Image (cartoon, rainbow, N blue to C red; front, side, top):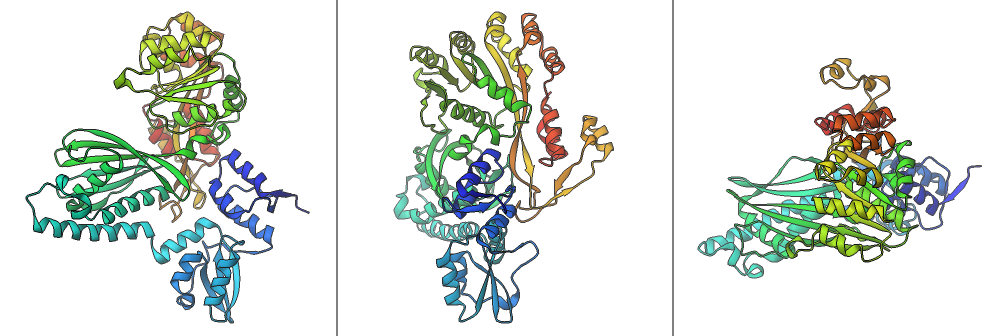
Length: 565
């Protein structure tokens, strides 16, 4: 007999593995529900576990889709509100797909609306079902955006035809521009971006139109064209939301606002930049749950995870996380702090800005324009009796010197630098006039990182790597020593072949060999070679391991790691 586990136990496992959005699980399993011992790694496997738990019937919607004769049997409003989709009608029995077997009320609504048909419920993977809904009914957010664009354009056009002499920025917004419509347009834009897992929204001006784009999994997608007539109204709405001055149209501005979408709290940082064609806007979406991942969810290899964890267990010393902008350094720091908060004393951070709040940690946001920079904050922190300090970034000589000295006096210090390789961080600190004796005495290790897109589980298939490509690109021959996969493209991943991202890591441990190189003021290649001789995996080594495990592709390794040393 299969061993039983509660929903809470599977939830903990999925969180630890980082293989499935916990929201999917928590929305399906009531607390304490027993489910079978399965290797639940994907939505398909989760659906199978649910079907087993409730003794239900499983459906694979990749091979099963609604037939023409069921359309109209259940009113669209019932289908869309219950998220229960009619599939086939055979001998008076209507099979329907749903993903929540505990939604008895929804199933009862479908039974009543079916006018006497016998209902055969099938449990389907949530993602597959929602994609069928989008195919049949369209994306509600995209449809809303198109509708609001039309409505807003007509309102702005009508207003402009009455009085073209007045500046859009000086009009009474609610009276003249239809605030409700433009506000709902912005809401739809943000909601659509969140549902696509976008990290950035770009509103870019061109001579005759405005382009709306999302950055998903680190890649900027194709533009959606917005009429130029809407630009001023939309920009004003964004500025108002971000607490900016709508009368200033020729100067850069920054702002922020917060939204909640499907129970997720999202901080949105806004940047306005004047161009020759008008004001461009970039919205950075900061998902609070992204920063609270466990270290086990970030993509550390079996070799690197215990070594990095042991560094965090140190009572003093400095750990640096390094890499270009947008590679997940903040996520790694927050995951580290979350781990430390459960076992260490007083933890204080200096951040610019505070991107997520962590319970049990004292967080402070610097304000350089008022003189409260990282160096000033660090001087104050040292008088606050901390056990652990996190400095968002080492930007200058003074901050570097103070952080190193703090790490020698019984404190664990975490911080970041912008270097491509782990060894480059040591060379950078030496360039910043850090004394070699301070580095050799305080630096525990340096973690360089990158982010690559994960292959979509729904369309993953084996692929053969052409040796000629490896040769022409001057890639490591080790790429050919194991299997490889790619994503063929499907609705789940929007035909990209990728869904989500995972980290690549290069962990340099400061041992005696590295200390000797520091004393010699060795350059980056020398330090890197000494670390590799001691067993350090490079970013490419870690990437090849993930390639052979079916997590990413050669193309991703080339895209992300080209030019990183």
